[in-house]
Amino acid sequence: MLEAHLFDAAKTEWTESAQFPGLLVKALETHATHPCARVTLVRLAVGGSIGTHVHELETETAFVLAGAGLLRLGDAEAAVQPGAGVSVPPGLYHSLHNTGDVPLELLAMHTLPRE
Image (cartoon, rainbow, N blue to C red; front, top):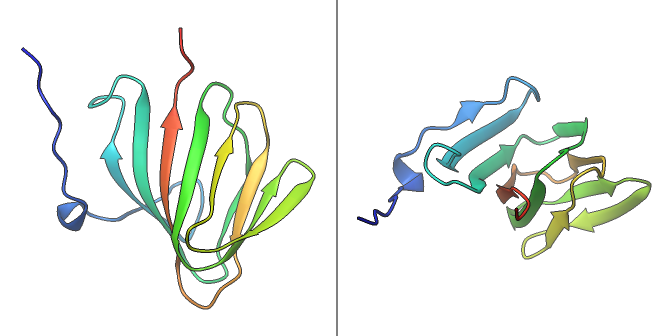
């Protein structure tokens, strides 16, 4: 029997990232509830950064909901604001810095490669 996983972002608690101070996340989908993806709401404090990191297997797709930031993708940089999105392939180092005066909010999806 097929089952759906229902979630309610309004009822999901924000938790602080152990890896990146000032980063709050709401896990909407995890590998426990979705076989191929993690879906997360992200809130980065004013002046906060998600430091340079890489995903070896997953593609990260992020969509900016609120705020403004500077995204670094390898040696390139891009300013991001609401409505902007990016898909970062596995193996590409990237980082994000909140350059605005309000929290930077994203919808982030990490998906595994096709088999």
